[in-house]
Image 1 (cartoon, rainbow, N blue to C red):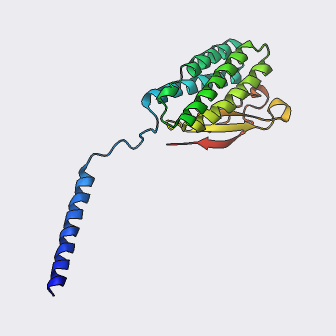
Image 2 (spheres, rainbow, N blue to C red; image 1 turned 135 degrees about the vertical axis):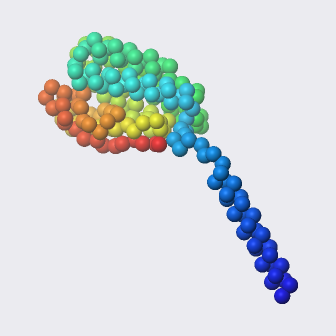
Image 3 (cartoon, rainbow, N blue to C red; image 1 turned 90 degrees about the horizontal axis):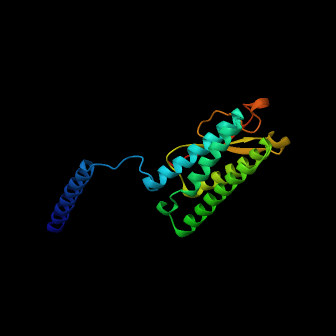
Length: 190
């Protein structure tokens, strides 16, 4: 009987103590609900890269050659200054991200050298594919990014681009079919 009473007393004390700990945990201030997996410095530089990319996409829609060139130069600068060293991840992720950033920069420089709008759009397609892979590599978690596809681009060869909205605004054939395309993927690491 004494063992039973002693056992009961231990159980009651343990239950009371764990309840106090749970109450204390509930009182502790919680961190922000949207804490990023990457540093704020990296996220700002990546956000700037996306801003220049979206500017480039929008200028392909309006087909303004000087604005396309300006956005491409901004994209080169943003890719070259991307704060890869601030990325949280193992060395393989960092090396892969650096490779994609260099590829985006090189292709944007190539876009600037293209003479025709169609040639510039082909460079834009390459940039879009590399940026899509970069977003997934670094797991950018500050915005939802949509991966859109038009099957009729480049004489029915098809092409992808990225967007910050679900609305389809086709940068490849805007005069003929501005709304041609579909969202193939939405990237949301939040």
